[in-house]
Length: 478
Image (cartoon, rainbow, N blue to C red; front, side):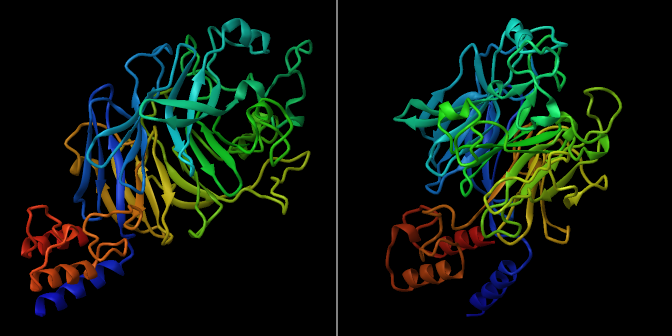
């Protein structure tokens, strides 16, 4: 009896602390070597580990059935020696490591990189480069170019069977360009009058001999408004586009819920890009990891951004900086349109600082932040190999170095924390309330006292239900 009183006390204390009780999913990889994906709990115990022969790219996605969808570095590509993770190999892998679906999605003129997003219907938004020849870039009004250009393309694919997929929607930034250099071209116009279009002459290439232009690094989806947000590191700006369009509408300037076709609905971070404001209006610097805060979470509808902010003076060295996680709400009217006056910049003028801005952490690459249901924010600092959870007052309530969990040398692009009830058949959930808690211990104790056997009650898998299962459960709970 004393044992259970103490157990209840410890369980009560743990479940009522400021840390969100959940499961943390992340991959760790480096270069082209093998990689692993980990699912751990708050006490750094490994709930599951997936081992991969290929190098994992970006963040894996966890499904309620315990499977993951993940992108791997392709073994070959036609996009030079550019920086950034080059993916293209997509897999769905079950809890035990079996591949359920695999698809190589790339060719000589297109290649995915950095990030992808799984939609509620199971389709996948893929962020990628597409090759545009030097001559076509010149004919579109680009100046200061030495070779081909690789603008952004987004494909939505629907997995089919075990080894194929169908493209069901696509959007190309190349369809939404403007320039003010050559009046003889059809995309000629006044930049500041057309913020819904992208000036083809802004932004420097990662390498002038190669085509990485925008260096987009993150993509996310909002089901409520059927819109997509993506981040461009080189432009120091995030963009929102309409997903409610058809592919034909997405290539033009009409249609969709916003009736702007595939044009930019909203952009924020660096208004000089559309000919307005000054350098004092720039809010972002080399940012990553833009995401909407989900419904019913504190701050729902706002955008969370990891602002990397490298401030070193040596070009492309990114040796030091002052990173932060920021939050803001894009201004919308009652019809769902984003506010913008003819002589102003997209608001808001200011943002809320969630964490950082005081030299407390820095990453020159990747990284990101997600809001948790209890109002905490879960943050990945890739360069420091650091995960931590901060409460609404900016206090760190949980922290982990990926090196203390992983046996690999490598980096984590972004980690995400899920609720214990997210997995539909959670290990140790004998009481079947989609949580691992004191009720599961009581259920196992009843099975032991009644000399009964139940498959789910044999949590350690030794064919018996005894005290070893209780100890195993305690480890899962705490």
